[in-house]
Image (cartoon, rainbow, N blue to C red; front, side, top):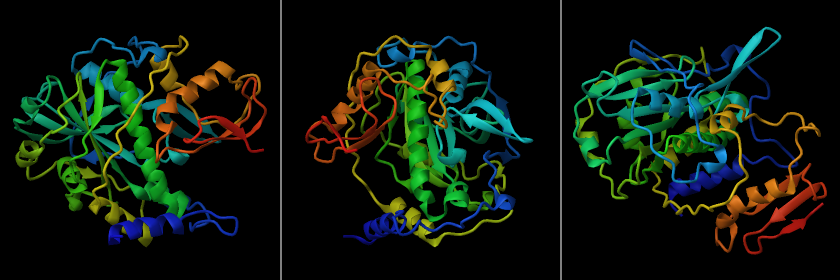
Length: 380
C-alpha cells in the first residue's frame, strides 16, 4: 500500500464516530470566526446575470429524454448557474438571515466554489475564466486570454471547474470536514448535471487531468491571492453532445495567462488548523484514482412539476409532517429503480440502509438492500 493510500485509510478510521467517542472538533461554535459563505474577488470586472425565474423549463420527469438544446448565450449560462448553484430562497430568524441554495450542502456551509472557462462571448473578444458569485448572481472575470482550445471541442462547449474550501466545514465539523467537502462537491456536480439537462446540455467529468492542472486553470495556484486554502476538485465539460473521451488540455494549459485578476475575500479573521485535513488533502491530490464507469437506469416517472420548481423547492427534512411527507409505494419503488443499475450484481455495489418512516404499504423500520440480492429485508 503506498503512502498516500495509507494516509487516506488513516483519515477514514480516525474521523469515524463511534459509540465510545465522537471524532475531534472544537466542541463549540466559534461565532467570531464563522466563515463567510460567499467568495468574492476584489478588483475584477463583474457581469450581472439575468434571473431565469420566468424561463420555462421541462417537467422534471422528462429530463432524461432527448430534449432540444438551448444556444450558448448569456441567458442560458445564467439559467444553468441559477438552477444549480444559485440562491433558491432567503430565510430569517431572530434578526439573522441566511441563504438557501439549489445545491445541497452539509450544514448549509457551502465549501464548494465554481468557475467557468468560456469561449469569446458576452461582449468579450477573448476567452475568459470567471468565478460564479451566487450572492449577486454574477460572474467575476479573473482572466482573459487567447486560445485555440475551444476549436478542439464540440461547438458551443465550455468548462466548469469546482473547488473546495475545507475551512468552511472544519469551522463546525472539525477533523471530519474533508468528508463533507467531498460530499458537497458531489452535490454541486450533480446539481449542475440536472440544470444542464433542462437546457438539453450534457455534462461530462474530465478524468485525465490532475488537481495541479485544475488549480492552474482556475488560478488557485496563485497563493498570494488567497487567505484560506482553496483546493481543486473537478473539471467538467458542458456541451450539446458527448465530447471525445481523449480530450487533450495541453493547448488550454499552454495558453493560460501568467497573472490572474482579483484578490479573494478573507472568509474569517482567523482559523483553526487541522493537520489531519491538510494531510489527506495533500495525499488525495497526488493520487490517480481510476474512475468507475457510471451506469444509469432509465426509469419511467410519473408526470411532474417544472424542473425549476423542483430544484428551487429542495430543502432538508426538519419535520416529518404526516400530512405532507407521505411517500406512495409507487414513488418509493421509482426511487429504488433509479439506483438498481448501481446495485444489481456489482462487486463494489453499495449496500443501502433505508430508514423507512412514512411509505405507503411499508412498516416503519430500517431496511437493507444488498447488491447480491436487491430485495428488502427489514432489520427492525
